[in-house]
Length: 393
Picture 1 (cartoon, rainbow, N blue to C red):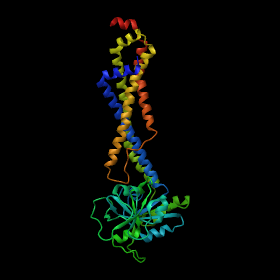
Picture 2: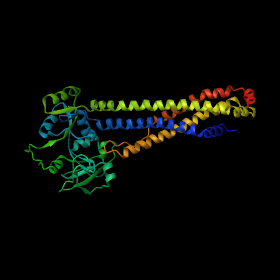
Picture 3: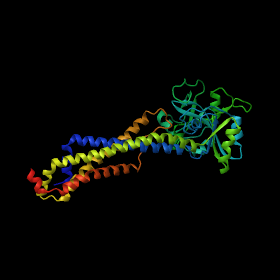
Picture 4: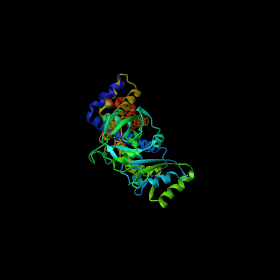
């Protein structure tokens, strides 16, 4: 007599209770899975995109908005800064590297970024096809842009004004030509279209001549030359210039703390569901044990050992919680993939096809809940008095 077969038959006999318990566990595990892989991806994106950037300098306004627009490309810039002021700051002895960014256009939501070779070096970008731009209106596109828009080297397109798709019509005149496609980098550059700054100026009617006072850029990504710069340079920029300095580490931590409040609430909600599911499994097994005590006694008479009966009840709890945990993990991944599919921003898109070793802890938690919920009924089955049970019929 197979304990596993007996456990299945018993669980399916109480099918409504079985499905309810599975759903409770699946829902709780699904929320925990969703939060785990979602927050991990967000954290990885925050750290990965800001790696190597000590300070962002741009127009005065919200520091967080400046970080989001210049590093993660998921918000509007706080404004523009004078190219002359930016160049002067870039020559500061405390600055090791200053990467200029000029924003303002997009192609189907993918941002067109004016910059120079220092951006390539900062993110250590490599080409999978073609070559980097050499003149105006030549662009290099990220791997996701090429894949989703089906662009290849030599193709041309017209960008649109604004930073999101559908803001305004496409720019008339000179089209942008793809000269290269970047290798996947696993960061925001996969979703960018890179060109030189003079292309951005030209599109907006600003000449690139040295005497032109209208030339502006959006921001500077700065690396410090020394630890002293970490203290002195932000104060200097914020107090002595018309620009604003924001720390990616500080603002990212603040952003994650804001997200963390909601995440923690949802985590406790999911844990509560798991706890309720554990109680429900215990009640189900306890009640079903009373109904099946005579059958279990007959099994003892037919030669089943006490340990076999104990094992049958434990297996029922494990089967319930294992199925619920597995379904919950699948549900969490599927839900996150749906969320990612409908996200407006291509820069911060989340994926359900992202797996972590920590998910095994959720399965282990389900197993522990199943064992704990079935221990007391299993002990009762183990200690049952055969003669009394059979005499009661």
